[in-house]
Length: 183
Image (cartoon, rainbow, N blue to C red; front, side):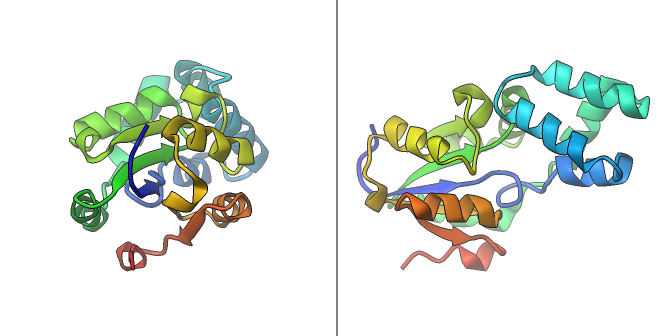
């Protein structure tokens, strides 16, 4: 249970560059249905990360290992956001909430020495729920043991923002480091 005010940060599109959407746009632009299906299954932990990359590999004839490695190389950390998080960490609980297959995001966090930034890391594949489902946010509240009013959420996806707001979490649409303004 965290004490005091908490700030939730999405990972992809806020702290780290997007990886999956640009890859699908480059290799499978004609298959948004497949992208959405695979994203959903991996985000919910319904398929393993290896099955996720194997499914993509079978469509583009690139090995699963090569795809995964290209994703890892595409992960660019926004150092301005990290700097803001470090400044906020003195006054607030900082929590990462992300839709992702668990091994991939955990490797990116470790490789970039980001694990220490967060008081808690909540990954969709580990809890079997994903944003923007309101149950995801209810589970986050349950895990944190805090009232909605003590939480502020930053995400780059309007649907996620709207869902969090609908259950009473103050939310801000991330549009760059300057949008992280706590007053």
